[in-house]
Image 1 (tube, rainbow, N blue to C red):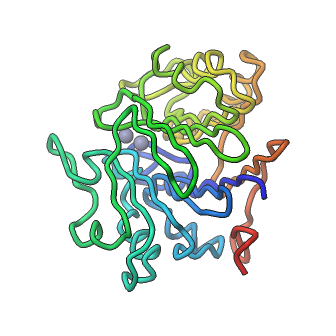
Image 2 (image 1 turned 120 degrees about the horizontal axis):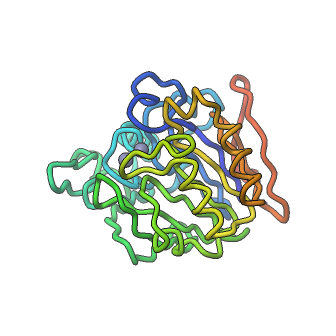
Length: 277
Ligand SMILES: [Zn+2]
Ligand SMILES: [Zn+2]
């Protein structure tokens, strides 16, 4: 069974999130028969309902940092994972602000919700996690939540990286060398750079450095959405020669020998691992 990803949101940044111009629910990853939810911001729950995905199937949850577009639905996702809070199961991974609170940020999860999963762990750059059998490298980021990180997921189908919110630097990009799929949070278009985030020009440098098979733009901000993420992705592709796709809500990615993009139709969709009846 190929590794699969569905984007429960392709928006990010303050205004896309407030107005839900795009959903901001993060993404689900199916890997080796297990389900991982990454960064469930606003829209995660409603989109899981739209694709008839049952959060009780999720084994692990990651929250990269303590900004609402990445964490606001996390407590309810945990309740779902723990079958309404009736069983202790699953794992939750978060940065120090997410789990413990630090520097005026967080914690994002109440003491009650931290008590529900089978395991709760704090990660820091340089850590290596075993997420339901999948090695995950925790990478340095440079963001306004200083505990934010990025991820390199070593799936059975190659390395899939999710960079999470960061500024560009060569050092940050070089951590992701060897990625087949590079998921970049491209908040703003062209050279419209805002501090602690990537714009299209930064994303182009990132892709040129990492040379993945496929780059995906997500975490799209309001101005980016207005300008046209598809056009920005096409511009990046023409400059880098690397296949570059702008995410949309409910976009899917099947990563096998080939990497195939698709889209779920909400109602009556159903996005489940093959081994679940
Ligand atoms: Zn964000
Ligand atoms: Zn952020």
